[in-house]
Length: 185
Length: 185
DNA sequence: ACCTCATGTAAACGCCTGTTGACATAGCGC
DNA sequence: GCGCTATGTCAACAGGCGTTTACATGAGGT
Image (tube, rainbow over all chains, first blue to last red; front, side, top):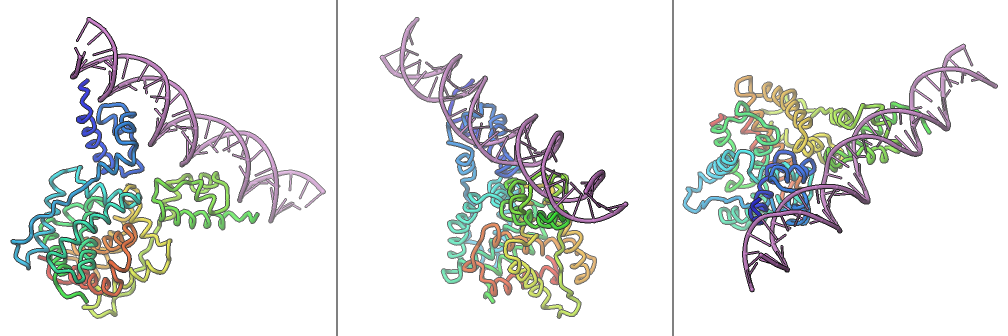
């Protein structure tokens, strides 16, 4: 037994992410998480306080939005969608935004976190691109499209036959481009 | 006591819809549903077999897509979004698609049902509008946008400050219009 | 009026959950 | 080497869950 509390905490958080992503908040059990981490259940309460706090810790998230300052104005939408696709494809069953999108549907804490991301990360980005005016509404429109994409791919599990990546990047990129910079009706 | 089994079954289904919509599948309890319906818990098992079967019964859903044959081709997108907005605003805490969108995130049965709606209702509609070719992909793109909108409004509870209805109908209607009829990249 | 069966109730069962308190043990400072 | 504390285990608890079983009761046919 290694007896390195930091390491086991990290293993717990990592296992937690996997379980929350796969089963949502309600259906993942602390026993399952502890088992995957190879430690006793009691440690979750000891280290994090409880299941909810572990969840909060597990989904602290940064979208890692790319630097868009050097991207041509009319490629911003596509570039943004590419970023999310790449991000999601990268970490197979582990991406945090996917955890949140799934979990937020039935868990108020998670829903709050997604809203916080909209506030702290999406809206500021849109403000940098399109200015203050209407930034909140533009960002919300962008959110409907990106979250809808995530939902279809990772909740409904629509295969590439339905959403061909290249085609989707193109079509949805155009949409985001409009939401960012075109005149709103 | 009325002793009308059909009526009490309907009251159970109706209460079930409300609870599943508010709390998702895992967090609604058969006891809660029975209490709201004003009957004993045991009747749920007796009449429906169990919680899962009651759920399946409660979310049998028809989008009631409007007749689009007389709508000008370039107004289809906006018209469609209007339809969904009206539908959602109508039945305050009771719309089935909202139940599904929330529940599907953590419940495979529900996710399957949403996919079925895509197959049996959205794709055929798109086929009527845009023809067979690419109907599946166009329908999927439409689904990303509409489900994303539902998600932001009813999972994240974004207020009208974020998604002003008229503005959203306009902007998102344009998007759907493109997904339905413009050339795909 | 009575018997009968559909309808509804009450209580218990068995299981699983998150959490807790008492106990073991490994490793570090002395 | 000794002891102390951080680390980890174990077992039990209390509560909630869906389901089932045995029992009550109303209403309709005869």
